[in-house]
Image 1 (cartoon, rainbow, N blue to C red):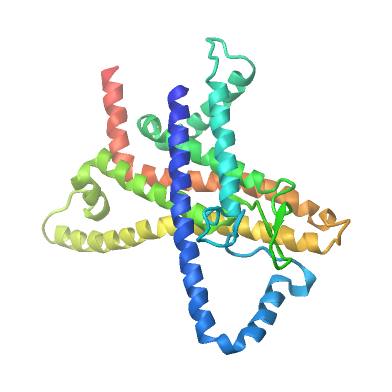
Image 2: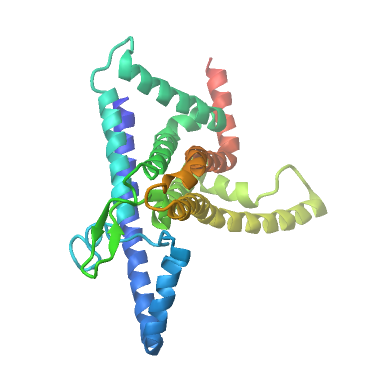
Length: 332
């Protein structure tokens, strides 16, 4: 349990650092794009301002901005400017999970009771679930990632639905305001950090399980035994299939990124618009049915992200894992 706690903390730290880097690069690029656009269309500033106000408050309803905003300061050159509202939400989720792991591993007993019993039930259930997909050998190597990722995603999704997220604000000098908290997975930088972290680990696990030669053969080599002209044809066909497989491998992290981001951002955008329709006192009423739907979506998307990641890994390591299972059976 203690080892799982350490692995969880290390992974969450890695995801947070990667997220900070991705978020900074994205914000820099966004600022540069705005500067170029402003220079090219400086004579349309007044019209641009009117359109911006219309986009942000179309029909008198506030809409969630696509990019995260500064949690404490808008100026990115300021020491606190790098902290975005979605970043704070992710760090809160990381802190909760690390504290959960520490509390569960604090006083271990041979017969688990209370909180330790619940924690072991949760971890064991996740372990058995991913074990059924990955196999006994792979799940021992990779559960620290898949278990931690599932818990991080589902907790971040549910924290984004709590009262105060999006409504606790700081006021700017011009009288406008910016929310200090925002759903972490409603920011594409966070989902990209997790997806590309998995992509790197996928290559590492695939090569270490199959060897580099076996890894390349799994993608490009013909499956089965052929001879003569048939072998030449199969080499050509499977070579073309391998090229398609390489394209598929490159698309996977992008698909994981935008599937999770699109569902969570779309859900929060829907709730924002519906709450704007209820006025100051009944804002919750139009959004209430969709709020329960978002509880379902938050869990399903955490499952989809980790399930697809596990399947992608199993597909590339399938033969290697089968060999490990045969060796284990022969040993007994």
